[in-house]
Amino acid sequence: MVHGWTDTHCHIHDDKMATSADESLQRARDAGVEKFVVIGTDAQTSAAAIAIAENHSDVWATVGLHPHDATNGVDSIVSYIASPKVVAIGECGLDYYYDHSPRDIQMTSFRQQIALAKQHDLTLVIHTRDAWDDTFKVLDSEGIPANTIIHCFTGGPDEARKCLDRGAFLSFSGIVTFKSATDVQEAAQLCPADRLLIETDSPFLAPVPHRGRTNEPAHVGIVGTAIADMRHVDVAEFARVTSANALAAFPRIHS
Image (cartoon, rainbow, N blue to C red; front, side, top):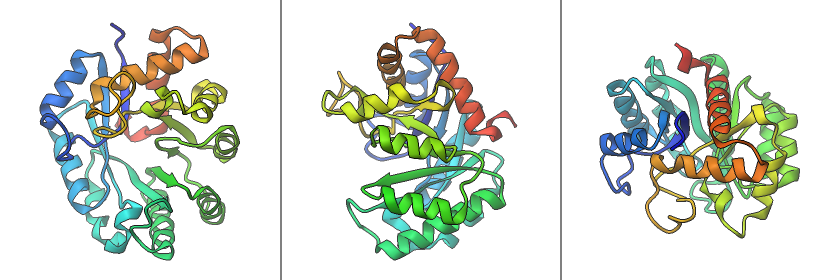
C-alpha cells in the first residue's frame, strides 16, 4: 500500500457520508492518506469544517460560499475566516448547470470571495460548471490570487491550458477514472507535475470501481494511482509529488 496521499477537497461533514467524520478520517489514514482539507460551502458547513479541523492535527478547513448558496451573501461566512485552521476561501465560483442562484449574484459572490482570498492571503478554491468563459472573465478582471485551485477539474486540454496560463493548480477527482472522461484524462496527462492536485470531493464522485457509491477520503489513492498510471510514473513518487503540491497550493498548512 502506498502512503503519503493528501485529499485536498472533501466534505466529510456532509450527511450523505456513510460514516462519521472521525471514522472517515481513520479509514483514510489506514489507506495511506496523511493530510485532508475539509471544505466549507456556506456558514454552517464552514463552521463544521473548522470544528473537524480543530479536532485533528492532520486536517485543515476552508471557508466558502458555493454558487448554489450565493444568495446567502458573503457576509454570512466572513466571521469564520479568523480560525488558524482555515487555509483557503471557497469553494466558490460559478455553476450554470444548476443555476440555483441567479447568475449575477453568483458573479458578485465570486468576485467578493476573490477579494477575501487576497485580503487574508489565503488560497482560492474554485468551483466552475458550464461557466468557463465567465470564470475566466472574472479571474482576469479581478486578478487571480497567488494560490488558486480549480477544484474537481472537468474541462479538457483547452480549459486546462487556460487555467495553467493563469497560474492555477488543477485538482482531479474520481471523474478521471470514468471511461467516458477522455477530455479530463487528457488534461491530467498534460498538466505539469508541479501543478497537479488530487481530491475525492467526498461523498460525491467515487472513483471506479466504487462509482455510484458513497465516496470517502480513503479513495484518494485510487484517483492518484489512476493518474500516475496514465502518466507512466511511479505511484509512490506521485503520492509524494502531489502532496508536496498540496503544501505549495495551501501555504497555510505549513503554519
